[in-house]
Image 1 (cartoon, rainbow, N blue to C red):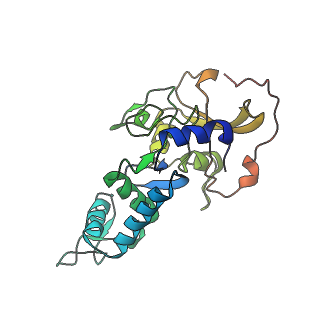
Image 2: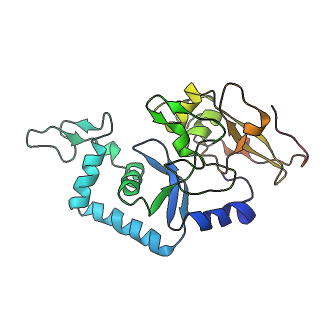
Length: 243
């Protein structure tokens, strides 16, 4: 689901700052296409050729498999590309579009950039990595996309649960956002977006937040598929965000 002033604000920012492709990072090993920006046919063609090359099991495939071996729990006896002793193979479930996109973003950084997924109003540098690197101006994202950020699926899982029956408030700490939700008092709520006079999802983090800390989400990955609950509704254009 998408929200906000796409035609007048968001799309012009994307066109200016993201010249090829852009997507959303779930964690250090997976990239999701919850939002997938395609600036040119040429950029999409290059990605398609990369995916095709993996099917040929050439040197790119071997590099991709070695990339997968970095994922905790990815190896199994008898898996893909096992060694002569039947060890070190990859579980087939780890061969998916998320890991393929992540590897592509690793080897082709200028071709597939990451969209911001964290609010920039609060610094979150601890527990082994800086989650603020995934906010506007962070080292691991592309340029500006206006004042909003994107949901790779973690904000939507927290707000509405999952398609496998996890309840509202579900947190997966293997996700960048899940880590922030657990350790940095982040939250997400449906509030009034006065730019379009409709409700939309907003997020903020920190233990002493203010109304100015709310950051709009431009999309919501409703993993539970209960999309009707998060439809935009009209709201007064003079509404103020809660403290």
